[in-house]
Image 1: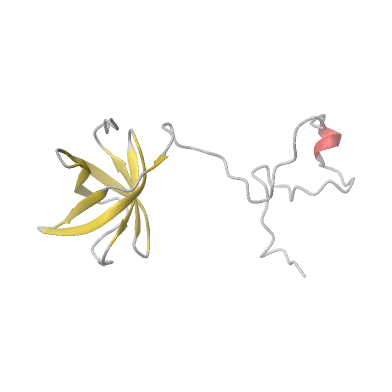
Image 2: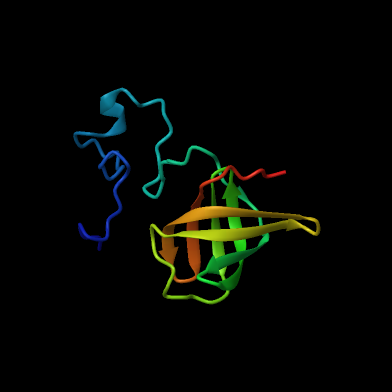
Amino acid sequence: MEDDLTRRKSPRGKTGKTDGHKGSASEHGHGSESHRSESATIERRLHPRVPVSWPVRLWVDSTAVAGRTVDVSERGLCIVISSRTPRIAIGTVYRVDVIMGPKHEVSVTAEVRYVADAVVGLRTKQRLKLV
């Protein structure tokens, strides 16, 4: 049985059920729209992310931490690092080397926006050229 703490709400704060209760999509003139799933998310990024797997080096102090990209955009990237270091903190700026190919390596500075276990979300200060 679902309780209020475990039930996910749609972005508008409604549970998304269309059982005729006040607030259903059909009562608000949205009957022709397909019904959003409860786990739907709203994309807030300015630049869409593209899934890629490139080697990276995240420079923490003077130590290079190896990892791989999960996805990238012009202004951000999500990486998985090989070893979790407690020194990585949200809001901190680090240098990141992205190895896109044998002769194509790019170094950028990026601010940590998200950290969970070995996953780090970064917003780059410079535009990443993805070609």
